[in-house]
Length: 173
Image 1 (tube, helix red, strand yellow):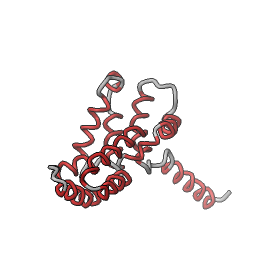
Image 2: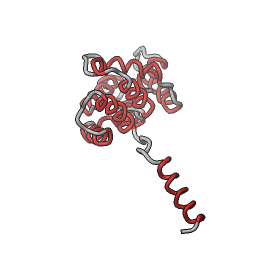
Image 3: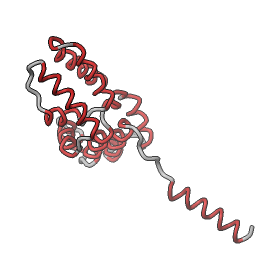
Image 4: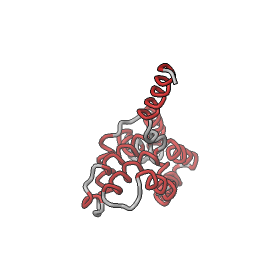
């Protein structure tokens, strides 16, 4: 084999080796499970990172209800916990609040909240755009679409409809 052929093979192998490893998470479920599984495996769970992530995604299909940035911040917070804290009561709630403080409001959420708070205002409810954005920045566009469908229910049923959406979301998690 000539030097040129060896250089091409080495270059190809180096490219695959450097780019190798696990692909970047593409969904909210993947990015959340990456974080949870990194701490679980570090804390002694008897599986590999890859098998844990696969299991997590299969067991928790409702993770798709999280916005990607929210799932990323949530999983990142969990991944940094020590083992005692990770397995303690309240670890997930604490990281949820940490993630909420880190996630920025995107334009789709901002637009949704302008309409959503307008609907609430027309029904004589007090719900500010800032409160709306703080809540809904954590949820996927699919959840926001399900809530937006509640706008057609009228004032008498609006709050109950939104409550039903979140009952379903939490049941899926």
